[in-house]
Every structure is written in structure tokens, then in C-alpha cells.
Image 1 (spheres, rainbow, N blue to C red):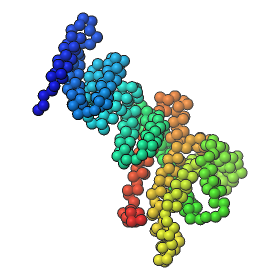
Image 2 (image 1 turned 30 degrees about the vertical axis):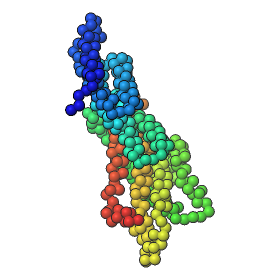
Image 3 (image 1 turned 45 degrees about the vertical axis):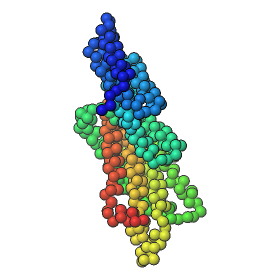
Length: 406
């Protein structure tokens, strides 16, 4: 084993003596036991530094010293956290020679030292962003593309940060207690059931419409596609007023449905579903239309030459190949339906959905009562969303093999 240089040994001895002298001074700012541990940590840092000096460039040596100085200034001088400083410099010296781990260390310091009290919700997304950038860097993309990716990911983290912060505000025990409430269970069930029914209804007519728009080319097609986008453009409150005007208790159509069929839409489960169908249909139609456009039309022609009818070619060729895009459209439509609030509270505030219950509890008792319900709704939506995203893995094996061949 190669012995350290004499200059390194002298530096180690000098460092130990300085720390011991500081620990023995009267009125010392650092207790003697802590100072001894700090001296040992600095000895370890100096020991690691000799390997940086031996095999690294001057820039690498300067970076090592700069990192130590930043930790010293930030943790020991500004925050006066001696034990934390000892831990951080030991870890810093240990991972400095591994750039990948050094990046995680920098994110940890940024999150739990600089960005407190938002440490955990900062560390998790930043670590994921760093991992994604590290993997993208291996693909040798141009620096401009990598920079755009980095800026976009950081901006996305900032957009999603309120949800990340909300998700850790309440303990599992608190969430379990809130979930035991009958009104919460009823509201969540109403939201999940109504959004599922609305998605199925939209799929029954939206998927055929998307297929037709993808295959047809006629004058005025752009106008039809604009009409498909209208529910996205209209404010939620306008949707609620429009539905009330058409189907409300005082409207001609609403009175006819009530008198002849005994059917009341406003303020009922059907009204919730109707409002959700209106606001969610563009997401399924536009996504499915893009998926159908990605299926070559000559595959249908080949199926027709083999004796398949247009309906059979659609069901056995086009729809299976576009199934992933259709599934994504259904997921987006479901997510938009379950989050609807503005039109439902005006048109069908009963039965109470989860977003309306959050609003009601906030008005009555403030954020402390509404927050756990909001967290529960967020967790349930994310869980169902993840399950639906992985639902494509449950597709029949034959469909997956057909996609792989094409």
C-alpha cells in the first residue's frame, strides 16, 4: 500500500492539533466531544482529498474544496448545525469520486438544508428529475435538447409541487379516520361511479366518431373538429347554467320529463353523469382520433380484400391496433370527469361528489377539515390512474403480438 506523502501527514497532524486547541479554549463555541468528532471527520475528508489530488485535475480539486466550503458556510456557520455538518462532510468525501451519487447528495443538501420545511416533497421529485436527466444524457442527445428537457422537467415539478406538498400533510391514521365517515365514503363512491359511467357513455359514441373523423376527409371537417373542442373552451359555470336552462325544474324539457316519464335530471345522479359527459368527451375523442390516424388505412383494405366487412375490419384490425390510444383517451376522460366541480355544483349538487364535499367542508370548517378529504380523493384518483395506465398490460396476448408485428 502506498503511504501518504510527508506533506499530507504534516497537514493531518496540524489539523488534529488545531481542533484540539479549539476544543480546549475557554468559552469555546463547540463542545469538546463534538470538536473531537469534527476533527476526526475532517481527518477523513483530508484523507479522501489526497486521492482527489493524486488522480484529479486542478478543476476537480477546486470543486472538492468548493463543496466543502459551501457545506461549512451553509451548515456550520449559517445554521449552526454541528452534528449535521459532520455527517454531511463524511458523506460528501465518500461519494465525491462517484458523480452519479454526488448528484443525489447535492439534491439532498438542497432539499433538506436549503428548502426546509419542504424537504421530502422537494427531494423526491428532484431526485426523479435527476435520474431522468442522467439517463437522457447517456443517449448522447444534443445539449440544446437536454437543456429543454431539464427546464421542462423542473417546471413540471413546480407545477405539481402543491399536490406533492398536500399529499404528505396528513398521517395515514388521520386519513383512515376520515375515510370511516359515511359522508366521505358516499361522496367518493359517487365520484368514482359517476365518472366511470360517464366514461363508458362517452366511449360508446365517442370512439365511433373519432374513427369516422380519422378516416373521412370532407369539406367542413375542421368545423366538426372545432365543435368537438367546444366543451374544453366553455367555462364550467357556463356549462352548469346551460344544463339548468335546458333540463332544470322550470324548463319545458325538464317539466316534460318529470310529468311524462317521472324523470328528474337536475340534482340527481343522472345530472352528475350528464355534466361529466359534457366536459370529458373531447379528451377521449381527440386522443382516440389521433390513435386511429396512426393505423394505416391499407391494413383495413387488406382485411376487406380477404372478405371482412367494414365493421369486422374495424373491430378485428383497426380497434385492436389503436387500443392503447383509446385506453389513454378513456383514462383522460375519466380523470376529467371525476374532477368536475363547477357545472355539477350548479346543476346536480346532489348526490354530493368528492370535489363538492371538499368545497363544502372548506366553507364550513376551513382547510383543516377539507384537507384530509382532498388528500383521500387525490390518493384514490392517482391509484386508479396508475392501475388504468398499467391496464394495457392486461390486453390479450394476441393483440400485443399483432401490435409488435406491425
